[in-house]
Image (cartoon, helix red, strand yellow):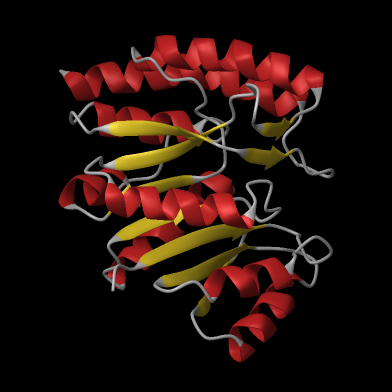
Length: 239
């Protein structure tokens, strides 16, 4: 059976975790979940440990102190790789990428020969992509800047659903901490592209902007500034 381990970084998510959705996700054949508690100051870790104790296929990696999402995702994926799944991925704890889309991306990762499959929030007719207009516009500006930084055509680097084929290439990609705190997704993709990895975007059929997101205008601006640093580091990797 083809196996997928999905990493879910969590920071102070005790009141937002939809355990029913995660319970449904882990009942899918071959899918396991690894929650990373990133030094939460609320009851997140307690909730996650209780969930893991009563649910097969669920484990928890506690981190202390808080490391930030980039490092939480990276350390989670390193631990996930130790179980030798065919595919490792990460999604956001708010399940903005719905259950059925997470499953579809996982299936695409197994079906494709690509090194990575990433969700893309393209709002065309027939798709149900609900984003606040201001965040959408900022996202389009950021995506254009990210494409320039990566020197690659990419529509959506910041969708929180990405899946990777377990390989030596991917192990090298996540072997060292990211330089960027706010745009680590871009840096991750850039590291892979620097080694000629094949990455495909899969347009999501549904995505919902969940209230309470920790990513705001300030975060987007900081991420934009990080792109300059990312472009410099990637240029050194390519040399």
